[in-house]
Image 1 (cartoon, protein in one colour):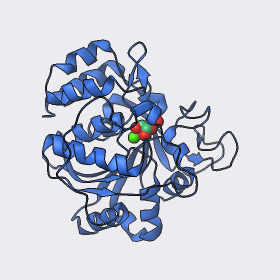
Image 2 (cartoon, rainbow, N blue to C red):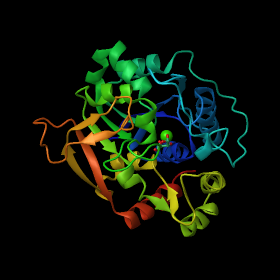
Image 3 (cartoon, protein in one colour):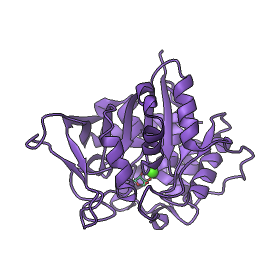
Length: 305
Ligand code: RIB
Ligand code: CA
């Protein structure tokens, strides 16, 4: 089977941890590199958390530390959702592994340049690293097969009325990505807020294997939803869109990022009726088949050991 070369750019982050773990063990995924960025918590913490996951599963996947601040805005983290450490609720051993000796943007460039085939990028955090990559090394766009990102919303936001966290954190970076011309799929809150685990699934995963036990412990500290309304599995939806796209309904459209300073800052404005644009720049997820998503989630966990 031809495996998909993948790089994950991430801010672990409890829901990031699920996406990263599943990608590590998915038979169709060749996870080449994990790059970290400031977002849910500081880049020191997101990097430490990425190393904790690599150590927990004892896999040899390189981790590179990325940007500590958005391009222009000050960082406003979401530690209230993920805990002070960013992965509260589970005790991880101190990682023995260390990060690559280069910045994430350099690691991204080196990985893309050396790859024999184009690589899929899966950003599940603010887009700061990827935007800098394209600005510093525009030639690397040729080696990106597609970007499948978790971020944005076709309706309301979760950080402000208008904006989803990953885009709100760095709207200028998002604008660079959406205007880059690179093939782009946006998995936004419209589907990720419906891709929820209920108490039933959390109970099931807790005793399934050590990854499930770790997830259940993290979920006890996760405030992305609740046991009553469901825990929102935002980031793993980006992986699902790559390996199991039939879980979603999609539409091709044009998405504009609001970078003005007002209350719409960070909004992803999709011209779904193409009233204002003749060219599309993104495929956006419109809906998710929730029960099939839950079945997929449990199947993925089975193989995550
Ligand atoms: O809005 C949800 C996104 O913001 C997810 O990527 C979550 O991890 C946070 O980064
Ligand atoms: Ca994230």
